[in-house]
Image 1: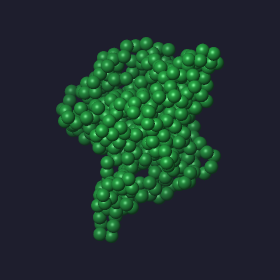
Image 2: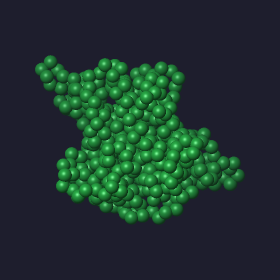
Image 3: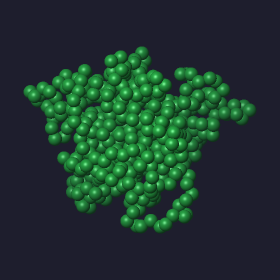
Image 4: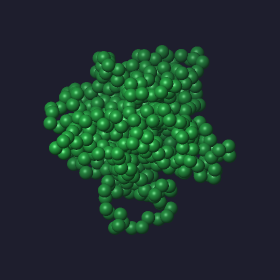
Length: 472
């Protein structure tokens, strides 16, 4: 493994500094020309974490005012329309000119049955906000606006990103240690509304590649021309296919909407800004936190992907899922161990799904969400939703099958890189509060996993070793 470089430590504020413009910034006319070698090497030369793909009109009352309840119901309808399209349509067969990989799937839905509103409902995530559905009615659980999140995955592109299959064909190469990028998948699309419209936003694959696969730019594999050519084209191809899926789904139902391509959030315009954000040896923050759990059973014959799935399922059961009757009801012993606290209350956690998601390479993803922290995060703008929920990957160590590795998207990195546009406008007090939230999220997730391994998985005693990460 090449996970040998030194881990740096940073305060969140140090990552919010250089090399980017805020959302809507008009300062690009006054900055010095960028050296050619520092240009973003794909797309249109700059990108943001999020892009607005489409806008729909709100539903109006007879007097022309917004019908908030009907508009919110339209959000759910549009999420269902898109999710069903992804689940039911074989894109390479329907549009071979655009779709170059395998069939896209709706994350969590692998049934051969035709997807309907009913049987896909658990595969559309609802991320709560602090906003009411109808502002004329008091806030309540039934009057809390949730952003709908639809996640999609393509085995061809995921397999290449995770080092399962060659990038660049048989003369190409595999992404080294690709499995450690698992939590950067799948692709997320969010749908929500405000007074002015209904919006369809996506997490930009070009951003994900540069922020979470940064070390690939300097890897030995890039010396392979076939690998380099396809790898540099891969994120843009994925982005174009997601755009096409979104438009095809709404065109098929004759929806009235406007196609857009609007950058949202921090706008990255140079490679040096990416390096400044991700270089762990020079003050950047690691995108991932990786931990190895080694069995105390020395007679173990080794773990398989099935064992990893079972452990992921146990994490869900400890965290609790979105199934009625168990939501956010952690065991009392575990809850007492969680370090987080807001107004004297320890926020509850849950899995966004009943089952872990499988991705190529044998990894299993648990999507963790604390409604309390999700609401706080989305006070910065609902377009940030695609950066949620928190993802945990469970997989067998690729070099030692007697070890289970568990990987997190680092909350510190996620907020500094994906919410930077909001945080630069915060007061010092507000930044302090957000830093506390980030620390609590990180501590909670690690404690939940440690507790699961110690109390619910045979052969482990809760001890672990942190894997020093590659210099992303």
